[in-house]
Amino acid sequence: MRIPGEDFMTKQVLVIEDEPNIAEAISFILSREGWKVSIHSSGTTAVQAVHDVSPDVLILDVMLPGKSGYDILQDLRSSDATRALPVLMLTARGQKTDRELAQRLGVNRFMTKPFSNTEMLSNLRELVGG
Amino acid sequence: MPQSRLTGSRIRERRLVLGLKQASLAKSVGISAAYLNLIEHNRRRVGDALLDVIAQELKTDPSVLAEGAEAALLGALSEADKRIPDAQAELEKSEDFAGRFPGWASLVMAQNQRIHELEQMVEALSDRLTHDPELAASLHEVISAVTAIRSTAAILSGGGEVDQEWQDRFLRNMRDEGMRLSTAAQGLVEFLDAGASEDVVPIGPSEELATFLDQNDHYFPVLENPTAWETGVRDQAIGQVIAGDDALTSREAQDMARQFLERYIADAQAMPEEEFNAARNVLNWDPTALAQKFGQALPAVMRRIAFLPTTSQTVSAGVVSCDGAGALELRRTLPGFPLPRFGAACPYWPLFQALSQPERPVRAVVRHPGGARRRFVCQAICVQKDAPSFDRPAAFEAYMLIRELNDTLDDEALVHATPTEVGSSCRVCPRTDCAARREATILSAGSPL
Image (cartoon, rainbow over the protein chains, first blue to last red):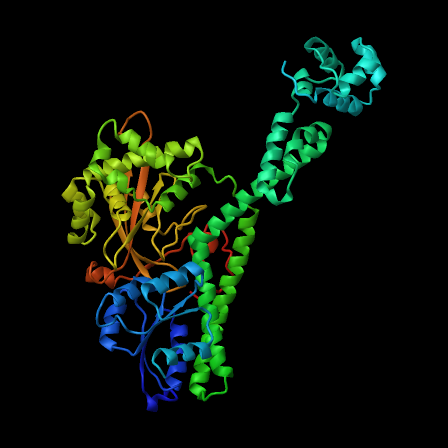
């Protein structure tokens, strides 16, 4: 199936999200806007996926099987290769404490579910300086 | 008998309640109406003997006239003042108020008590909302479905190019997510409705213990220190842990906590933390191998595996136990594997399979409905709690260690095993074709699994 916009891919985004329909919607939206999109659904192997894909920006869910988004973020920030990787975190919990925890761990943007597609795109463009 | 200066006021109040004239009461007790008038206006102290006679005539206890419910009332008025200090109640006039208007003062006391009870209830409900794994899982379902629907709907209605094949696909996704949302939302509402009618205050000793253990994550570093195991120090160490926690308010709960912590220390002595942590990693979290290494029974090893914090980024474990009747006792939760806080659990858990075959280890890969459909390895064992006896029936208990299936730790057969479909409890399980169902689900029929 052809995804509109896939011919003018520019930046690479990795989406770590275990809900298949959310991942599919995100993938479509970003592909249509010209992003090259990879999807990964496991928390356990997420850090390895980041190293494999080397994305320009990461969209990271918090509640993932095997390992939480917070733990993944912590791992990424402790590695030289991924310390500066822009990360947009998605979570169903938008409480102040969750936001503060994410900020302490070094998140770049924090969005609560359900989110606006436009806002997500806008955040991603800002993160890669587009 | 000690009297407050408002004894006279209470005599007057009581007399009026009974509809007696001042002169009539004075005559009955053998004093003049003028003298009684002085007493009733607190201008004369009434002697103990006269007070006894007056009380008898007024059909009440002398102490009620002398002290009344005043002490309790004054305490309650003071408490009410502290609760809402902005009201600027005239605290110095409390005694006067309580004496002159005991009915109104009692009303203030009752309302203050009611506020206290309601605050406790709100706190308990709030705690339940925060920590109930079933509720958290349901809310996550709702938010995930809403997120998928919102993003997909925005794509379809956004005006951008979406070819027919993608349109069809997104419509299917939206239909599925709509069903999922409907199921989860309906279940949530009914679950909360049911919960609101339950008497959650007080929560009882078992709940207090569960809260205490959850707050400490079932881990007590101070009791891992060998100095805390020494005779004479042990009781003191346990006492300090209990005293330092505000969840254990009742004596029964404190006794239960003491028993738990005594067993905790026994486990810690038999399987010291550092040594056990190292072995846990080397032996791939295998309870049977750990049991053999430390010469301990499986239930103790399972507790140790689940209670000790792990340095591993990928592996953690929960543990649950039940008695011979299947009532859950110990609950160390693991994210993604909800353990019911109230009521009975799913009979398909390996825990209950083990209960029917004592001393035989049972292992199975299981999966819960909905969500991310994670697979868990459950290892269970049933053991006899008491010493064997010809004189009484045996008391059994079963333990189940819960861990997420892990490609590194688990062998190929397990990784590729067909999972047993389980739930948390019947109330919140959507499986409609379950032979073991004991009560109707609060989720609607036909929900997507």
